[in-house]
Length: 249
Figure 1 (spheres, rainbow, N blue to C red):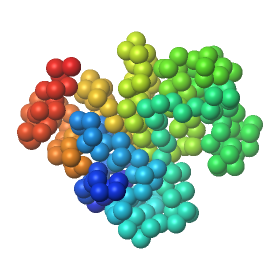
Figure 2: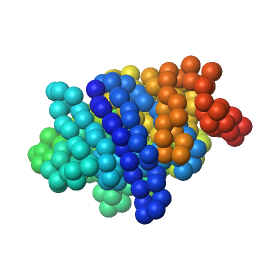
Figure 3: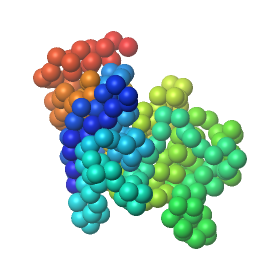
């Protein structure tokens, strides 16, 4: 179980998050939906301290015990421990352009975790095979399609063996014909039991894969529940408006 409590985040005079609470069970897939500007990406980035909340707590239950309280300004050791528990997949692929797919996936285990290069290489090959890129290990990012680069990004996030996978609109920068391969890779991870929090507008993915759907608006969670229940019978007017907008696009 991951407990996320009372997360607040402001930028200057602009309040982005207004006290977010969320409980995530081990092996759950949580999909976060909401209109642009609702705070979805900021919330996701707070979960591994890429953005530092002004207050709130994140706690991992045993055996992966960790508690970070942002109100007390956590030190570098706590922030590093938090980041080691989560793998992040970004909208933009953020691969090192001068490194091959294999070297990109090896980077975290070798440079951050101190793993031997030989062991990291063997694991990186397996991960690239897992995401369908076993024949692309020696190619550089410019030689890969956007969807292939995103799947390298997923393999790179998996390489640190995180407790939690975070996906920030992983298909939003892709051409439509490349989206499905990335979604299929994510579906495979869900079937394997990875704990995932996914910010996306892919309603079909949420229906097929999510255990819980969360709708954010105005920096708060306005509604959450099982996907079929939430999509077929939303209880909040803001949820209804958002779903109508998405379905009209």
